[in-house]
Length: 255
Ligand code: MF3
Ligand code: CO
Ligand code: CO
Picture 1 (spheres, rainbow, N blue to C red):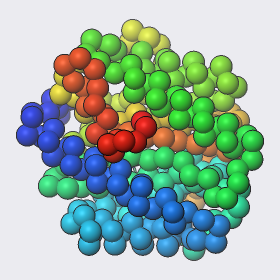
Picture 2: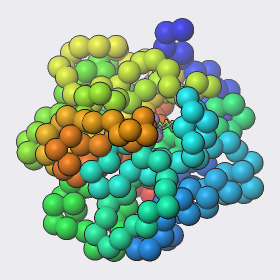
Picture 3: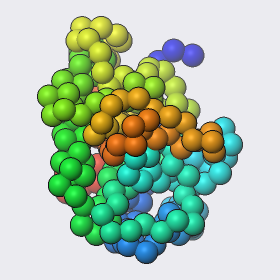
Picture 4: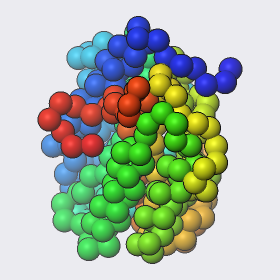
C-alpha cells in the first residue's frame, strides 16, 4: 500500500477523529483515582465513544483485542487489557484511546498519576513526555523519520532511561496501523523523508530500567522484562507545508 498522502477531505476527517480521541482523555481524567478498576475506565470510555461521540472504539476486536481502550499500569509498557484490578495510590497508568469516526482514526495516549507518584515515576513520566514533544516539534517536510527517532533516543538515554524497540509509531488514516513505521530510536538522516499530507503517530515507550520487553500469557500486555516502570505518550500528527499539526491536541491544551 505504501504511504498514503491525505487529501484536504481526508485531513478534515482526521481532525475530527483526532479531537474525539483527545476529548476522551480529557473526559476520563477526573475518574482516574485510587480504587477505580481499569474495567470501569474502559466502560466509561466505551459508552462515551458510542453514545456521546457516535464513534467506534478502534481497539475493540482489533486482531482480537477484547476491550475498547488500552490501560497500561506501572511496569506494563503498552496494550494493557482493562481488568477488575483496582488502581492504587502511587500507580502510573497510560490510557490509550483510538476512535474511528466517519471511517478515519484518531490515536492518542497519555500518562496519569493515581494519587501521589514516586519521584522516579514522576521523572519517567516527565522525560517520556519531553521525548514525545521533542519528536513532534521536529516534524516538517524534508526531514527523515530517523531524525525523530534519534532525538528521542538521545534524550531518553541522556536521562539514563531506555527506549523500547519492538513497538513503534505508525502511519494512520482509514487504516489503524499503516506505513510508515515510526521508530523511537535510530540514526539521523535515515529512513523516509517527510512530505506534506502524511499522517502518523509518535508514541515513544520509555523504560526506567532496561529496554527489553516480555509478552504476558494474555498475548497482549507488554511488560518490561526487568519489571521496571514504563511510560508512554502519543499524538497523531499531520505533516503540513511548513511543519506539523497535532491532530489530537485540543484547543488551549499543551502538546
Ligand atoms: N493504540 C495503540 C497504538 O498506539 C494500539 C492498540 S492496538 C490494541 O498503536 F489492539 F491493543 F488495542
Ligand atoms: Co498508535
Ligand atoms: Co495508541
